[in-house]
Image 1 (cartoon, rainbow, N blue to C red):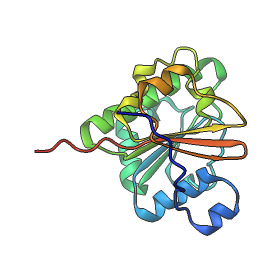
Image 2 (spheres, rainbow, N blue to C red; image 1 turned 135 degrees about the horizontal axis):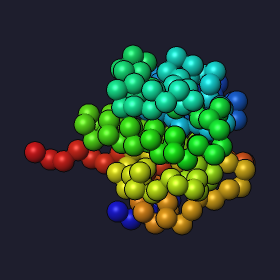
Image 3 (tube, rainbow, N blue to C red; image 1 turned 45 degrees about the vertical axis):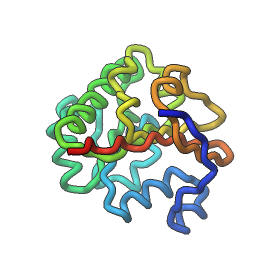
Image 4 (spheres, helix red, strand yellow; image 1 turned 180 degrees about the vertical axis):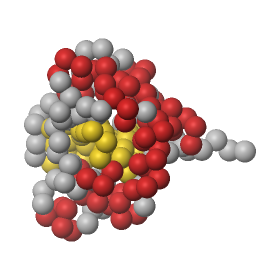
Length: 182
């Protein structure tokens, strides 16, 4: 898969675009279109808008594919909220949560998208192995904020097909892999 850059805008609802955050607009579009997704959020940015599908990662029991699956089926999305997870245990907790999402994707093909908020920090967590995330599988949106940059392994592991840039935010999208022909 080759890396291409596109300046094609991602259509987002007018209210979200006016608010100035392409991530909120993309989430609103996914919800509107019935697209299944998971948001991994270390800073609590999306607590209000995604409260119905929020799983608080301070509770170890929710870091399980069954909880993620049940929430995904109930709401169509899951917010994996790591805001209150102690810094020291965050890499292990996030790795377990991402592994649960990956297992769910392997079994069911859902969710279609995984959005990694503040990816410039999340992908640099010590102890969070690149294979635990599975970027090469596609279906990822990496939100990089405040002039941060992705680690080199993230940009070379998979082809970033679409990039959307606005002041203080860059979105890199790795579209979901096409289902195998039968």
